[in-house]
Length: 317
Image (cartoon, rainbow, N blue to C red; front, side, top):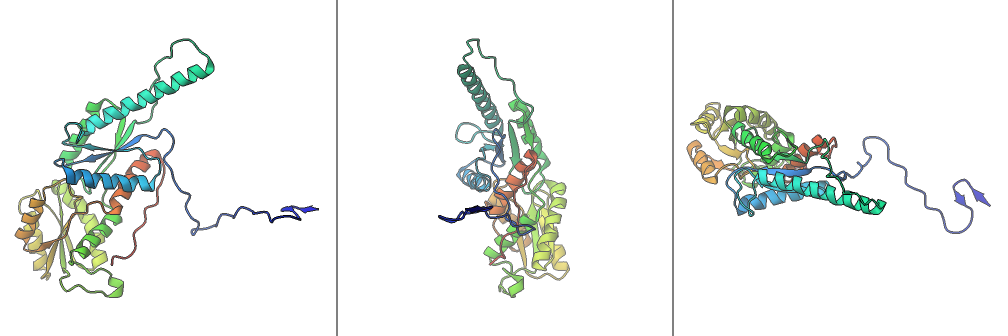
């Protein structure tokens, strides 16, 4: 005898667990679609071991968030095999894709028994790669160079915008300040740091446009720390010193410099000089904070029409 859910005797039948409804339902795991374009991370600044290590870690984070992702690294100032340029990486990606298409066509012809020569496969309408600049904020000069590299590669590739502004970058800035002992780690627990700053200079590069864009993330950081934050461009003469003077004029006595930079785009000596001019301590650049890899992936995924989960991390400790 049996009943609608299975046999009445023998081992119990394991039924599939129903999906949990509502907003607490676990998101379905994402994977890179078959044949998806490559993600090419465009790394600014002078190529070197430090820049390569940082870029590899960012790419590793992106791959962990999207299994099957074809992610590659190109350098804006790259030259040669050790530090390939964005243009060279795009050209190689296109060549590999064309070769795979040709092999697939030959295999299909063999399986079907055709003896006629196989026609060269025609490229599809989609991009071969999606180029994501490793930049927290806008830099018109760098973006022009990356756009030119894409054009020179003669490949169908899409260039995304920079990573910020975004609340995850405000979180990353908070973490770096906390690590340097320049900010409270957790306002909710009233945990204090003796050297915590009561005013933050948010340092960026890219001129006035970058300074204005950084101001948005600065407001998010100010809300997290409950202290005033002013953005200043390192490549505008006297901007950092003026921001520091303005903060002191409004009552801030202990300032900190927070680099709104990932790292490779500027020489560390410029950060040290800016901190000395402002008369304050400085936190480290954002580096390969996990949010950077997630934002890189988010820019790529937007082009593909998929949506990875972007959530703020746990409270800073």
